[in-house]
Image (cartoon, rainbow, N blue to C red; front, side, top):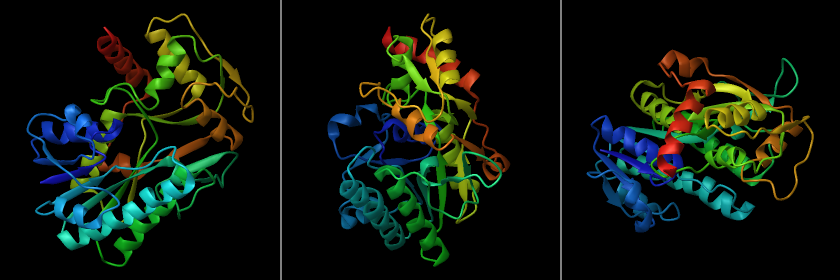
Length: 312
């Protein structure tokens, strides 16, 4: 039995679906029953909360693995810290108490983006010492949460791996959320300007496949960066517009530029990374593990077809 927290979220629902399709028995943590309609038939639902360690331990009873994806995105500092750091600490303790064989902790490139020693901008690397150059509550608390997991592995308390996700987009049982919202806005002509900075991109489906590989074949205490391709925001948005049959194109602003306050969701991430020069990725361990995440040309084509189907 495999337990998934954040099971009804954008990436979490993709993980649940993949595990179910691969024949695993899956138990999904569900806080809001109204959101459980995205889960496949046959997936067990269980009520648990990151704020309640006892409920987490009960949910993990009899589980061989735990995929921890639940997180607070866009929450203010104290709330982000309580859920992302405190919640992860309770997950780790529950894993230890329940005797779970392995924890897959989902992190983000924003948690390990540090100044690149070999050039301008940032580096996202699997051998990063920890910490991040980003100062927003989400990035800072995810960096701290990752340290909680890796410290527990070093202390011999749990067996765990870290799956580091870059900008996730594409088909998901949850629907067109996350960076899909920015793609849709661009195709509608609602993104006039975007900062021309380079970051990592990966399909939610490929994140799910990478997480499963990390669970089955990963090395305890190791970080695996799940990235399809590093590309600029304008390149990604214009490519999607072309594939979606949209005449709209964005105007690329130089790094360090600002966007208007009414910019669409996730457009502001181009500003954040643009101030720091974007980032490059080192994901050798994930590639050696067998992760074959698709690049933006194929990934955006898949996304455009899916988006057309779900909006029909």
